[in-house]
Image 1: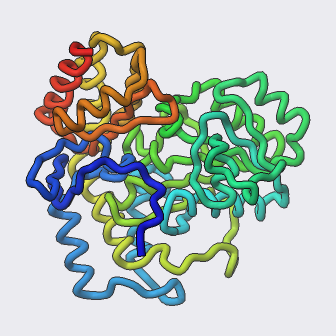
Image 2: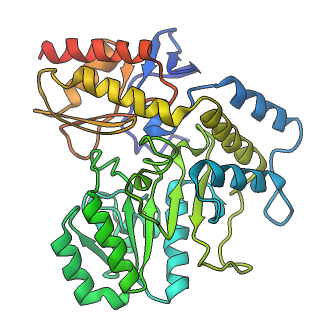
Length: 379
């Protein structure tokens, strides 16, 4: 049997990782400034993370959600405290797409409406409803298309108001990323988010903040939208939550009431996943990683802002989009193959996406900064 080849692959096979570095099967060392799409939040193989997972493997790794699992309770309590959302409830699942599916379903259960408003440039996942609110026709199959899903332009208040004026009473939820990642590190304005919140309250619409990539301290706040003082009805999270172990979560405002069978999952919230997520929160708290994201993100921006070929830098914390005056692929490939540094791209071909671990150190950022300068000066 062969693999179903849907991924364009770099000819690199990582076999070992530690901190912000990877090693391939030939012994070559790479600096990881992408973290596998912002997944690696506390660095590869953090000692506390490793110890907790190994310890749990000696106890129990899985049982279904038909039994008590006090690790879920511990995770919910620690997540509530660190995020400042202690009055919210937590539903655990396995991925960001699954978190968004459950958020959309819960919203529709709550108000009995079926339409969903999403925004240009969005990416919410590849599953049924999640891909229907993703702005990429190439990955939306005919079976996923439905007129219930309404697209409005990013940061366009006038168009937003027009949509609500015409269809507000039919809209169940608005789903928006705290910061668009795949879209090219696009940051919503406070005016835009405030208007969305206002219109949602006026029309009994559920506000869903997709913090799958922008959450977990990545932006310099636990969740990116918290910078603006916006209270979301539902928040989804995943990527940085387990530092590589598959886990997702839906944070649910207390106005929503749970009932048996309302949501469900086989693997979500399993013992190993919970231990991984608890370890991440422990390290984030003990090592002040949210503050480090603010500090190191600002340092990187300040050091590279005057480099040639950079048009703009879009940044919150360590979620950084470097917009070049050309397609970024040449720069990205040079960083990877000539300087052994992993970076990312986006749907905006000009934007180089930077998503290092939240515990990145100055010495490691200086390696990236030096390499980027050389690449851009040699174009």
